Amino acid sequence: MPDPAIKTAVTPQASVTTSDVPLRADYISVRNFNFFYNGVHQVLFDLNLDIPERQVTAFIGPSGCGKSTLLRNINRMNDLIDGIRHEGDIFIDGHSIFDPDIEVISLRKRIGMVFQKSNPFPKSIYENIVYSLRVAGRHRKSELDEVVERSLHAAALWDEVKDRLHQSAFGLSGGQMQRLCIARAIANQPEIILMDEPCSALDPIATGKIEDLIHELKKQFTIVIVTHNMQQAARVSDRTAFFYLGKLIEYNSTEAIFMNPINSQTEAYVSGRFG
Image (cartoon, rainbow, N blue to C red; front, side, top):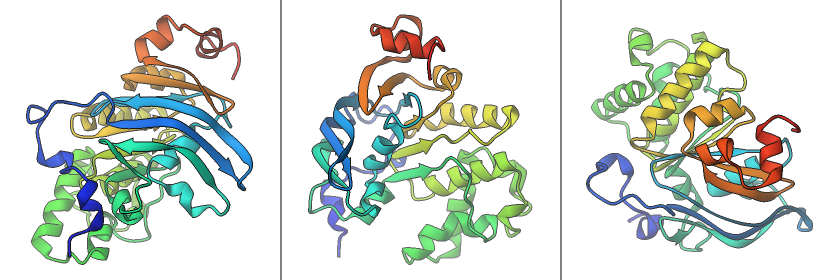
C-alpha cells in the first residue's frame, strides 16, 4: 500500500537536477508559529519566516533563544516530549507538516537530522549507513552497497573508510564520525537536512571539512543549521535568522545580517556586545 505521506510529498531532491524545477523561496514556511512546553510555558512567539530551497539557512542567537526548538519542530521531533503544544503552522513545499494525513515517520524520512554530538550506532561503518534501509525492509546487497558508496562519497568520507567499511564506527575520529552521521542522514535521500550545532565538538580542521561539505550538500539538499559560531554562520549560510527570547528579531541574507543589520539588537549580537 502506498505510504500515506506520499500524497503530500514531493519527489526526493536527489532524483532531480537544479534545472528540472524552479527553486522555491518558501520551500519551508513558518507561519504565525507559537510553541509551548507543559501546555503553558511559551518558548516561541509568533514566528514567520520562509526558508529557501537548496540553500543554507542559519539560526543564530544566544542560548535559550528558541533556535533549536524551532529546528526540532520542522521534523516534529518535539512531538516526543510530553505536554507540548503549538499554534500556527509549518509548511514544506506548500503542505502542512501537521496535516493528519501525514504519517510522522514518513515525514522524518524526508528530513535528515545531524546532532551536536556525533552519535554513530555501535555497529560497523557499513551498518550505520544502511540501518534505516534495513528497518524499511530493504536488504538487497547490491542496493545497500550502492547506497553506502553514494552516501560516503556525498559526505566526503569514502576515500578515508572504503577499506574498513565493516569495522566499528567507533574507530573513526570525531570529525569522521560526524561525517558518518551526515552520510547516514542522507542515505534515504531526504529533501532537507537539519543540523543542530554539528561542529561544536570538533577541532578547527574537522570543522573546516564539515563546512566544505555543507557547501557541496546544498547543491542537492535544503539545509538549516543552528550554530552559536557567528563566523561559521557567515561562512556557510546564504540566509541568517537571529532569534532572541523566542522571537525572530531579524531575518535576511547573511551578508545583510552581518554587514548591515537593520535591528540594533542584531547589530549588538553579531558584533559581540552580548550573547
